[in-house]
Length: 130
Image (tube, rainbow, N blue to C red; front, top):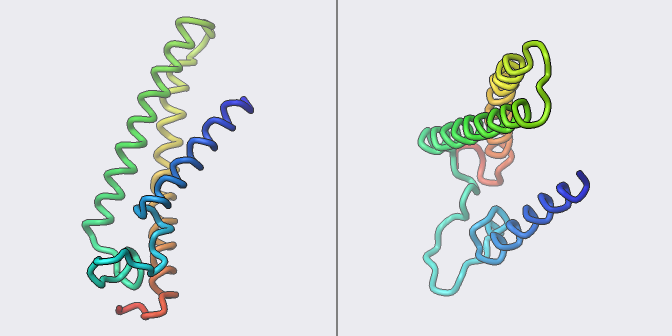
């Protein structure tokens, strides 16, 4: 389990380093511009979120959740039929329990994202109406 954790965290760290070096990630909003680049505000600095951006976020969360749920259910079914045939309603509990977890976590994540964005706009040096 520790090796899996190290591999996941290492790949995430490598991805963040790649984003930072290419200037595509969140760390690129430092205000420094590349030579010859047009003067424009850094992404996410002093701009209000749009509905289009929120819809893209919701779509991303839903596709990630559904994809992860389906992959988890494939692993549960493979484990059930390949390794251990647990008695009772193991499969039904796995399907409904994980669906309930997603139904609870996705709205909480969206609400936390909304609150974070509102706080970021409110704390912006340009003010909430920039």
